[in-house]
Image (spheres, rainbow, N blue to C red):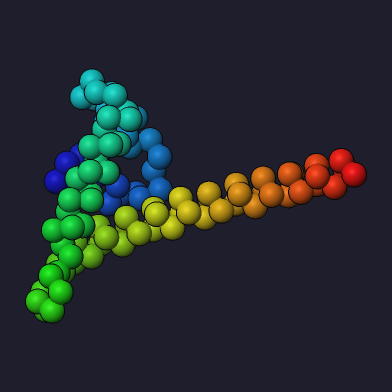
Length: 98
């Protein structure tokens, strides 16, 4: 298990993981994020059972998938909030143009 994975499991809300680990290894933070995103996607694909095969995911795989889904939900909620705010701003501006 990599240092990033270990720290993400210990504290999923810790936003400093990538910056600190990237600094330890002398790589760019964004590069590390992209590598880990790719690794997570590969593991998720490998963990998905083939249709009708009846394979069961291990607890570690389920935990990893759950964490990935939680991150995705949080990202989508944030994006949705931004869109709602933008709609309010633009709709109020359009009302004043008349």
